[in-house]
Image (cartoon, rainbow, N blue to C red):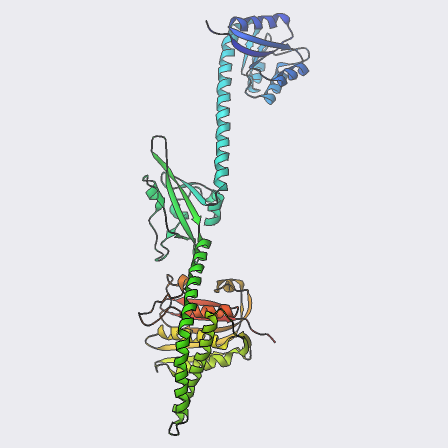
Length: 509
């Protein structure tokens, strides 16, 4: 024998007899009935507020209340609570109005045979509605949870469908890729993420296509994320297939971890380690090099007193002596660098120093190479180390010469320049916008390839033939700029030429 089913009902009815008929019908149907009857709004509201109801049955017209008024209250309180109108006078228009207002059914008091089927149907449908509403609520909560988790992840995350179209992106992805997440959705993966080989800058195979075949992809080395002209980031890439319960690949999830700052710090650390090794090397060779320069200076001094020396030869001997003396000063700086000491800076005008180095270099050049000077710094002075500036300029001149093996023109210029913010930020290291003193060395040689440009100032990196370069020239130029609180700008076009610019703060007034 079936257990009686509990049923909690509020009956809005002013007739004792009609209320009794409804109660008997419900009890005969096998429900364990809890029925509360009322005929006014305050009592009705109180019963609704008490909760635990399964059904409301209401007469259409009461002396101090109405079925439509009760229906409106129920809709505000609980839209899913079944509501059945029972009346002896309701007409077709009133019945239609009640159904439009949200009543689930209406019955005539003279035909209560339909009451039990109507109640059973409405209880089933109400249960279904509650289950759907619960499922929708749980789905919405799950969506919110997923969205919260996705947004809390620091990595850029893209969810893609089975054909590689972006269906969702988090805020980090929008920030990295330069588009709002809502705009990323709906675009093909290849249109929003372009991965390049960091050395050759050639496109890499599509990792999403691999994941859609069922294989995960995890990069062990950073790759280059192309973000447009002159914009890129170093990223680590992870892509994993998204499967259904039966193993079918439904899409993929891609994560991009921006490691640009970490990569730059590691590069700086490597460079610092190389410079440290260079300092140790400088200390070890400086003494022997100083002995050689002493011999050069001694021999030059002895030759200078030879009465048979021609005027031209005497001039060249003077240049040899000047170069050797500068070498001695450079050795002193190398020793100071190796010992982590410091030399006393000097205040000196730039143009005379540039002219002296350019003249010395031009005298040693082949005839098919010409050095042109355009000195416009006037009497502007800087505070620093003349010998270090000589060495930096000489390195730039040698590089300009080597970039033009068939000969050509090297243009050396100095002037005061005002840098805008964009240009100043491009310097190595980045500078503040404003006025700077500039030395520029320009050639019309082979130029620097885009693949080499990011590593240009890396110690021991050289693109010259074996025996032709040490890879220490440009790092020393950068070191000179840094020691003088300045920077270096590089502008180069392959096959057209290169302009290397060293910027110094100057003494105004």
